Image (cartoon, rainbow, N blue to C red; front, side):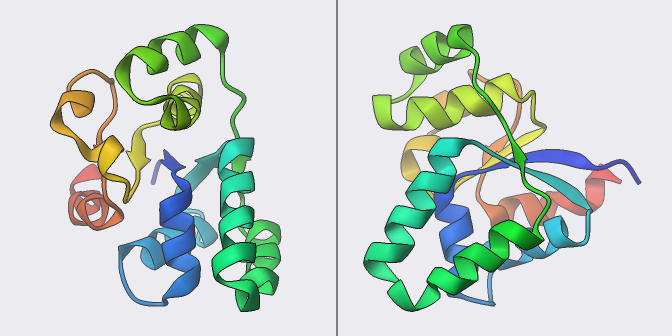
Length: 142
């Protein structure tokens, strides 16, 4: 079975930390089982940590455990991908999109409506969807 590179937006990681139910948690479980290659960037790490500290201070230990346990692949973005991403999405999300482009991922998963707009999905080479949608399509990938 070939592993798929899947870029995880911070919203997916946070949702997976908060609840053991739902698509986000299941995607993190697939990463732990080495079914997928979970790709992130430094911005995702910072955003997850900042939000966990602020909104879920009791989960900070889970954050550290998650990042030690899962085989995250850190993607460094390329400037040309950042220039393209800035034309496609708002500045804050451009770093995430650019990293996914630079990482040549097979999927971008997010719970953020900015990423899930139809116009963006048509302008990138990989599917952009929620973890639940990804999981529904996963059996057809193998």
